[in-house]
Length: 236
Ligand code: 1GP
Image (spheres, helix red, strand yellow):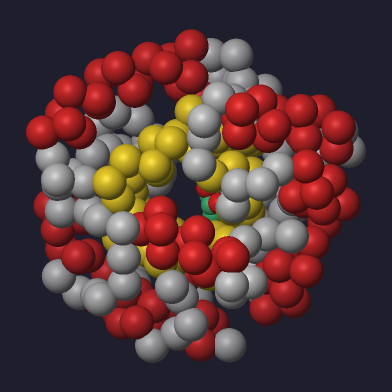
């Protein structure tokens, strides 16, 4: 069980790194090569998903990745179109920083009956967008406003509400390719108030960035764009 594996890791103070593969990103670096770099790095988990799905059959894409790696493959869905029985688990994201019912519950209702038929672990996750300096794809597509990056108390209140609603993880995201990643002070403020594992992503591009997020309280750090542009950098 993926949730138990992550919970155990967090209890044992082990930090985890997740590599995000977006089905819509084509950087010219073949998928096989990117997954090979992941396999030879300290990455623990592979997330698959993105805000849009224009270019690929999602189910085939997940199946292909699963065939290339021993790492757990976890769906990070942008919509109800992004589900696959080939994944080990899905983060059942509710976009709790926004007030758009489509991403709070609507897409979930579309996906739930199909998920029930699949042998896939479903992990309820409170997903929070944090302002990053400019409009990200996820903000635009989800039609929601992110939490201002200096409003730590508002971020904490959302994370707590998510935990009280039964969400097993809180995922704070500045959005893929964010100009600015989530401030350490905000991570610290949220981590000090919640008891569930905290996932941090968006705009994290270096070893120093990763270390900063971990020491502020992130349990899992997500790396996306760096892997797409410079997969060899993962070895660092
Ligand atoms: C985006 O958190 C992920 O949802 C990863 O962001 O692509 O900026 O690493 P990057």
